[in-house]
Amino acid sequence: MSTENFIPLETLCSHYNVELSFFSNLDEIGLIEIQMVEQTQYIHQDSIYQIEKMIRMHQELDVNLEGIDVVFNLLQKIDSLQAELLSVRNRLLLYEN
Image 1 (cartoon, one colour):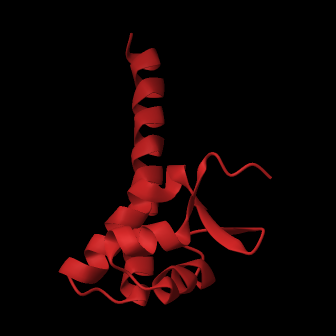
Image 2 (cartoon, one colour):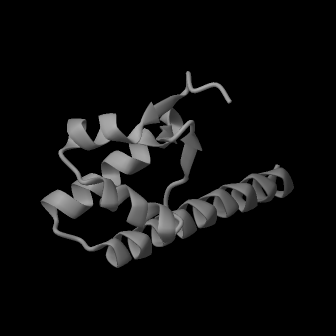
């Protein structure tokens, strides 16, 4: 497996000043996906934006992991409802014209 689009967890831990257990716990509750390649744990670079949000919630707002899970589930539901609303609006526009 190529690791060109992946970032080692050790790098993230030192960059964000977070312990490895934080990422392991996020992986356990299903918020992130850790890939193991040759005894090194990696995170895909597309996950960085979400991970930064989680770290800020945890460090700056003192939200625990369960709270982060709830917040991300609610944000996901909001995104889904907004997409559904947009779809319904577009269909309604077809009938109005």
